[in-house]
Image (cartoon, rainbow, N blue to C red; front, top):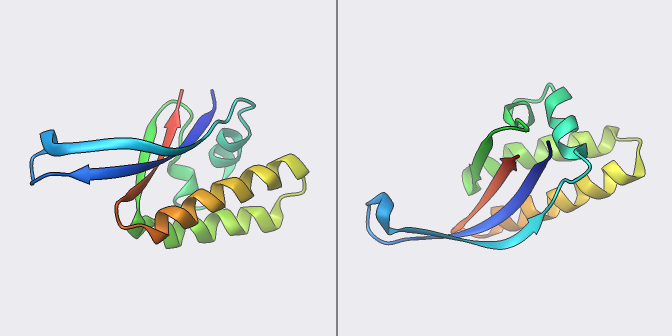
Length: 109
């Protein structure tokens, strides 16, 4: 039960939820459940909210906290594959932070 990371572009027409359109910009799959396992065992506030069976949507406003937590996990990671995965997650998070209309969707199975 992995947690896939999706960078999504959001287009909102008006204030109604019916006017909300979301399209994927980039997708990072977690077939080996490494990101899910890291989040499940994390004691960091944002990462600990990520669950392998739920979805969590983070906005641009959430990115400073999320980025700092992923950077901290990256600094502590010993496994090369986990480091590579965290670098890719960090790249998507930084891209989300740079665009006003982007969201980061953390989707469990």
